[in-house]
Length: 349
Ligand SMILES: [Zn+2]
Image: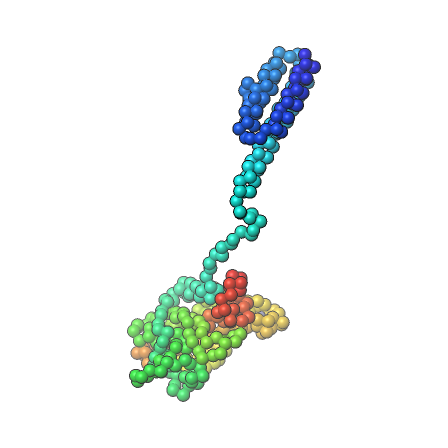
């Protein structure tokens, strides 16, 4: 009995192994699978004898038939996948498609590093209570210079420094050299307390090099209220710089001169790259500080020019180049990287 069954199993094995290998389409392969492994298939029929067998025979016949079932199942799957691959290849061979060509890629757009820097700065200042103010890019001399206490003979008013636009009327216009005109316009129409930021594009008659550009971006801040002092300025700039560069950032004041502030200060920020710990630091040249902006207490003349009584109110103002801050925080060495718009450079930030 066992021998006879064994022979039958071997016959099934040979027969179906050959048929599977020879089978040329999926439908026929499925029929074949049903014919041997289906509910009424040849192997299933054979297995029905199992329950009537003596235990000894069951022990031999059981595993043998199981092995065959597994072997045939695997053969069906392998053949099925071979047939599918062959079919795909056949269809591909009918087209001109070259699957070895590299795929076309699409670059995702992103914000310019300067826009990212500006947003970071304005976000921090907005949280500190500063309101965004805007003004014209083409400014008259009165708002760009006169009301800011910048006298006629000041070098900033030289054609070497400023782009003048000749006008047939009584005064010339300029491409604004700073966003301070926005401060003036705000003070003229609004009573203190005033707390504004004026970010935007400004123009200087500079030739372009690694640190200068005839077009760049500024962000200015103005706070006018009662009893505003340098202490308020230092506190607010420290908060601002810590927002930009982290909790460890410190600011340092050095005396300076600007026509529109008195006293005036240059503001240094502690080096974010070495914290003053590296004498060979290329960013701060080992000093631990980086000059970052100009600031001061608004000159009484400027307040008076804008209709604010300097006996009652005082204010601080600060202004900084956005590029300078962005170059410092991103460690960019050349300002031209911002304007040449080489995607390979810009996408690094
Ligand atoms: Zn440093």
